[in-house]
Image: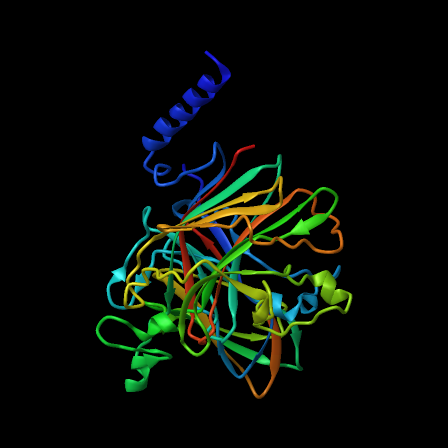
Length: 321
Length: 111
C-alpha cells in the first residue's frame, strides 16, 4: 500500500470510529484531539480569567478592567417558567454570566501549550441568552429597536456580544491573539448581528505597569477602542429563539494556523467565513514566561446592563500536529 | 467509587462592602455539599457583618435558607457549611453602622 493510501485508510478509520461515538460524531475535528470538554463531568480546566498581581498576592494590583471576570458555573439551564431545560449533551453546560452592569465581561479561559505547529481548531456547541426579567411594567416590553410582538422579545436586544479568542506565544516570546466576536446588539439596543475582529492586540498588565495604558472597570479588555473592531463578512442572524428561557444550541468551528500565525476560517452554524486575510497583529515587544502558550477563551459582554449569559454545552480542541 | 466533582468559586475578590450587599447568583444544582468562606482582607474599625445564605428556584427570586445566618466581628477567616440548598446559592449581608469591609468570598462545592 502506498503512503497516500495508508493515510486515506487511517482517515477512513478515524471517521468511522467518530461516527460510532455519539459524543464525538457531532464534531468535525482535525486528526489529533487535545481536549474534549463535556461539562457533565466538571469544568474541564475552563476557569476564570484574572489579570496579573504583585508578589504579595495583593489583588488590588490587578488592572481594574481585568479583576472581575466571574467564575464559570456548571448550569443545568433552569429558568423561572419551564424549570430545567438541560444541555445538548446531558444535563449540564458551562455558563459564563456577567454582572448586571453595562460593559461588564465574563471570561473563561483554558490553558495549554503547543507541542507543534500547524492547524489548530476549536469547535463548540453553545447558546447565548439574556437573564429573564420579571416585572417592571409596560416599559419592560421594549428595549432599543425591539418591542414585544409575540415573536421578538426585548431580551434579544439586551444581549451585547460573545467572543472566542486565543492567546498564543512562540518563537522567542512573539505573542499574538486571534479573535472573533459576535456583536449582537449595541448599547442602545440596535440589533447588529455582526461578526467582528480587532486590528490591535489586547492591552496587557505589563503595558499598564509601564504606564502605556490604563483602563477602567468594565472596559472592553479584548480591544477597548470601538474603532479597532472591524466587520467580518455580512450580518448573520442566529437563533436567540424569541424569549430568554428557550435554549437552542449553535455550532461553532474555528481554524487557526499556528505555523503561519494566521486565521484560516470560521464557521457559525451554516455560515463559513474565510479568515485568511484577517490580520493577526503581534505585540511589538517580546514576552517572557509564555513560550508555546496556547490559550483559548470565551467571553460574554453586556452593554444593556442586563445579565448576559454564554452557555457552552461542549468544546473540542484538535490539531493536525 | 467515581471521583467526585468539585469547584471553588471566588465570588468576590478584594471587594469593599458597605451597607447591604448580595453576591451574584451561582448555580449549584450538581453539588451535594457547599461551604462558604469569607476572608476579611481589610476592615474599617470594628465593622460587624451580618450574613444570610439565600436560595432560589430560578436565580431571580431569593429566600433565606434556615440556619444559614452568621454575624462576624473582626475574624480574618470565617466558614460555614450549608445543606439542602437546591440549585442556586448566594449570600446576602449587611455591614453595620456605616462601616466598610474588604473581603474575598469563596464558595467551595462538591458533588
